Length: 104
Image (tube, rainbow, N blue to C red; front, side):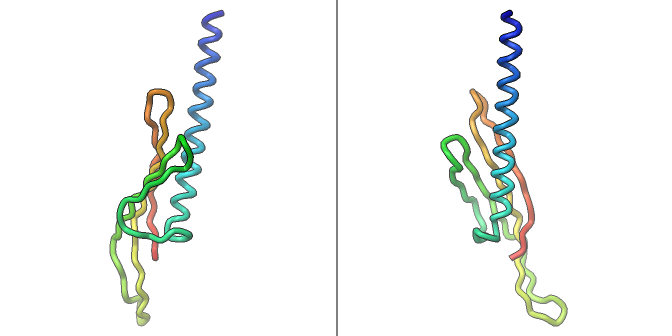
């Protein structure tokens, strides 16, 4: 009977870990999509909290600027954006990181 309870406890912990990882991944995707669209791309490190458990950190790096496209003068800047969402799960610190390129 004790073995059954231990197995059920591990299964519940596994489900909680999957739920937290899924939530963190969705939050990181949403933050990454917002960067350069609803939030300006400002080089440097930025951070905040999603709620009492989850925190985010974004690193924005300017990669370069192009001024000319053919015969048109069009200023376009390229940025590398990395978003990390972290949380505590029991005694362990977990995190999910996503990275993308953005034009502005």
